[in-house]
Image (cartoon, rainbow, N blue to C red; front, side, top):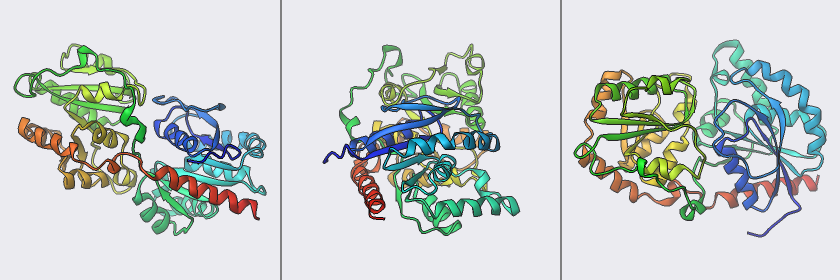
Length: 388
């Protein structure tokens, strides 16, 4: 791809170290842009630090949306001064995108907003929800481009619910193509599986990433406790629920917490160590559009490493699991009934899912032309700015 080093992009981040954010920065760099980031700090899983200069904007508290407002207002002058030296602002998150738009009022710089989550606050019924969506609609109509990780985010929310026609692009949480030849950390001897699951050893399930789903914890830990000779559960990532996971699993030889990990370096040894990956949610509620539309990193990573997945029936990516026959879709939230579905899996079913995983087209889990699409869209925005 032709290099355009003179084009500079200022990236705004809600947090330092989110794998998707760092992946997007790498994509922008691969497209030939010079990237500098301004980022807030949060207590979050630092799975992948961005490979570009990063300046801190201060620390934010998780889920304290209204408290953030005052911190955002305080840094707007700083962002405005910084933005003057860049051709475009790329904001990863609705809140930092709105802040970027306010910071660049009256300037020629356009703002691109990338959306990785639709939170309940945006979907509230009644007067509060309508006010929030009205304000968001105003901002959304003025972005140069909206990037979403799911078609559902675009079609159902931004086009359908908000009714905005801003140019948009879908970039799912796929993996980068160069990872095919990436030098991953090798699998330690203590991680390796020996023999056939259910016959020579227990069946091993991996739950990786931000560990914050209380229902998933209950399902998996109880499975391990009830069937200690049949199942092993391995956890890895940022522990949120429960925060004392080491103490909770103490004394259980069939449960392990491996700590936090780095992406992509540690992915191979994690996925190579397990038979199936837990990518299932609790029951999807009426306002849980984020769970319904999103495709988690665990899904794409499982496809890349050929590990069948557990998914929640009703989530968009569960359609892929059913169509391709690459895992188990959980259709209940009662723990006993979930266990019945898991207990029904045997070594023959697992072998079929693994074989199907190997037949998946690479474009399903690897980026192909997405970098070019993003590059073309951004260059078009910058070109339009220069002619106004």
